[in-house]
Image (cartoon, rainbow, N blue to C red; front, top):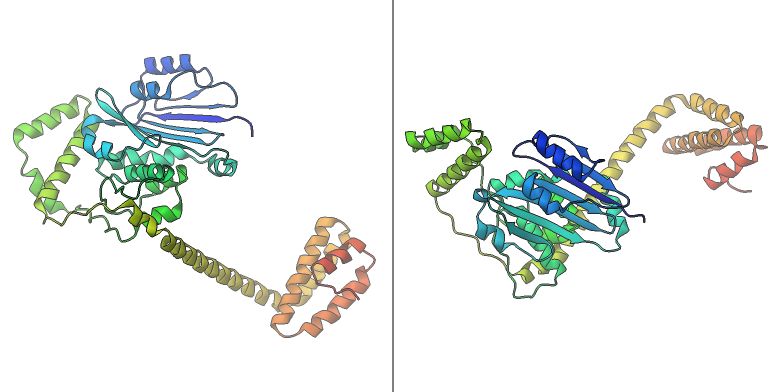
Length: 384
């Protein structure tokens, strides 16, 4: 396989300035650069910059793929948007790493699937940035399941000790968002392992979107606090205001609703014990899906044959017409007509009628050897 590298960066909180775009153009003359993105592909050479530096100074998200199996997904989060202890609990060397910047956190999910070219070919061409970028907003809303996915990938690769436990007990591991599911695919995390981790895990709490709790919370805000938020909003700090308000509201909701018994982290060995069960559940689901698909296809086929039987002569005429054309694709189509006719006659228990018509077809076109060979190979004609 020839060498291939793909780099994509995305600015999410605010667009790039003209000066920043010019600086990026000096790094690469052939990259696709917009006010919010930087994309480049390499079949030789490499990016003349450190992706982490570009993230520190310009962007909020980064996706990297290499043909030798290396996958990287980076996010830059405002420092106030997520707790340090929450991030650090999930850190796994070489798979999920965190770097503290002056005003941000830089998160990196990565792994290398060495020599697995089939895996790379299966994921190449996907719009990974669009699939994965929503994880940033999920994290800023307090949804840590993407961190759990990174931790699970890392500890499974490292053959963790039986004494290891989950960094934190999270709800909703059995109901991942589309972006979180995409992350499991991006990291080539086994479906059965993901499902095992989600077994018997309580679902997410219902979202509180009704107006009364919101109104009650707004009534707790002082005029001074609201003026502070408005000032930040008018000073182009809208994203920061939105995050702060949502975090404050979620914290108030958590305090105001009845306290639930906290979940306890599970030992990793408990999750791994469920792998076989998860595999069996998946296989049974796949078998049901396969059966349902076969039933649907059978119904379509039955409807097609029932309609065909309304005018057998029309299909026989088409088969003769294609046979007379004398070239391969026409012979293939003639064979398909005959297969359809054979099955339609059989459904009506009129196989004898089909055989008589087929003998007439053979008498007329028997000198077309290529056609006859096709009919024999398809078991439409039997060798005498």
